[in-house]
Length: 132
Image 1 (cartoon, rainbow, N blue to C red):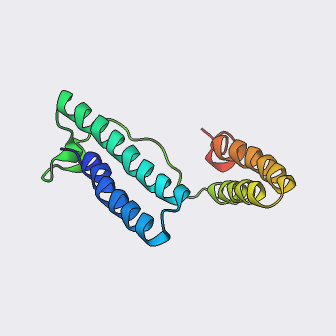
Image 2: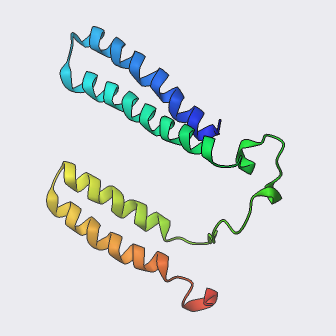
């Protein structure tokens, strides 16, 4: 069984008992209790899907505790360790969520900053010192 399956199935054993405790402690408050039980059900659905999928495919290197890093096939992607663009992108995401909670005009400013930050993140390797 893959580690992802174990992770999501363990979520069932966390969220459902916490939902029962929350229901008893809060006197049956509907929104939180329903949310916790639905979160446990969602974890069960994802864990079940991953379990069924893991039965149909060959074991992966991630599932073998004795596997080496070189056993994983192919390139896993390119990530630039010197990039500063994730920081303004995260700040703009914060502004969007903060604006949705407090004032919509802040969310619009955050969306504009997110667009600029996303373009900067995507195209940083096409210009300047690190151009391909």
